[in-house]
Amino acid sequence: MQLQTPYYLIDKSKLLQNMEKIARLRELSGARALLALKCFATWSVFDLMREYMDGTTSSSLNEVRLGHERFGKETHAYSVAYADYEIDEVVSHADKIIFNTIGQLQRFEKQSSGIIRGLRLNPGVSSSSFDLADPARPFSRLGEWDMAKVEPVMDMISGFMIHNNCENGDFDLFDRMLTAIEEKFGPLLKKANWVSLGGGIHFTGDNYPLTKFAERLKRFSGEFGVQVYLEPGEASITRSTTLEVTVLDKLYNGKDLVVVDSSIEAHMLDLLIYRENAKVHPNQGPHRYMVCGKSCLAGDIFGEFDFPNELNVGDRISIQDTAGYTMVKKNWFNGVKMPAIAIRELDGSIRTVREFSYADYEQSLS
Ligand SMILES: Cc1ncc(COP(=O)(O)O)c(C=O)c1O
Image (tube, rainbow, N blue to C red; front, side, top):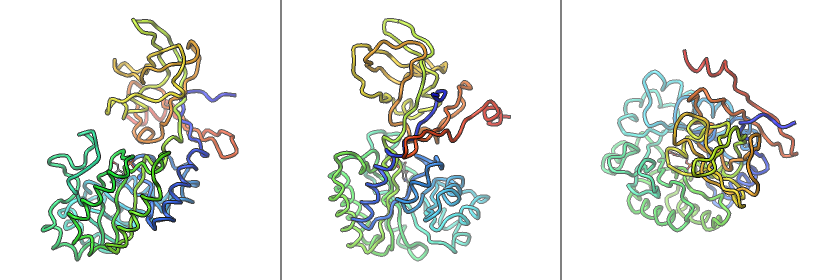
């Protein structure tokens, strides 16, 4: 029997392909890989991911707790800003804490003295093509820029986090930016024991030169005497998941449109934020449709795609590549039915691990 849509379907055998590349990179480079929970935190597949990755990194108290309790291994805590009322609990779940500013480091010096501490640096260059997601944008609050200010607090920290790659599948660009980091922060890096180079590097992509990447990381590690960490989010889970939806209605308004039982605003919010199209495979055939979400937002549109056959009410569509920044961002706008989460196990069997009901909607409000 087919599961009722909408649901996210995580395919473990596809996830495994990314995991094997991560494991290979770790082996070749000596770098450690931490899953960025902000991108993907569906803990039902952590049993598989744990075998191939070193732990997790986080952006809040909730994430660091989830990483500690559900993934285990190394747990990095980072947040743009911690509140007084949460810092003790954050520290209790982490084995490293990375502060975003010197101000936060000094404020929480006492509470964090029992674990390894680091600071986020901002090199002022990034690979982002979106102002919205560019950590090095003008007046950015993400990390410290000024070496002269960092020098005096070096006795409080043993490492750094530098996240400036965004959706970067270009090794040469990564290489150039790392060289810029070496030139800008070299003297500080020499004093560090570890450096996390953040996420945003698409090294699990098909044509990415994994060996060259590993060599570059190894050289960086050797030159500065640091343990390198990476924080792959998207690279860990890319192409592992689909969002399965059903056509609810058809209409023609100058174009052929179909309305499906999901919503980009509620279930794939980043498409809306970054004004991108969803992906449908193979996106070929003589029948072109604009696939629309069912929320009331006029621009709730997955995109226009080509299909081999005419679409009819009841037909199913698989939206591709829907693991990253989807399940962690989904919301109850319009009260649209929340997609269930299902897993295709390595033996091909499919099991639903979570369904959401009216009670979940009601309890998200009061
Ligand atoms: C500090 C940090 N680490 C890791 C990531 C994960 O990035 P990605 O999912 O692009 O690999 C992000 C994304 O914003 C980030 O800000």
